[in-house]
Image 1 (cartoon, rainbow, N blue to C red):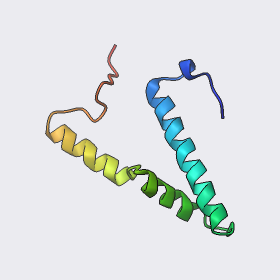
Image 2: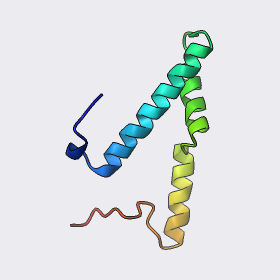
Image 3: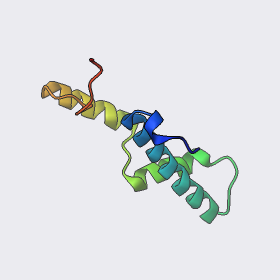
Length: 81
């Protein structure tokens, strides 16, 4: 999925890059395992772990800690104009 990088906010670009990295790694893991059917999630989660991508629970926990410290999880981002 190739898009004009300037057409997306930086966060969306980073999310897409992360997704693409996980997708490529998960596919490689799946192929190396002999392409077993019905196991896409297993390889996706393994790829996330290998690439150091936090789970939604870890993201939530980090956001709570940063909030408690008075910091924004979205450092450098602002939804305000």
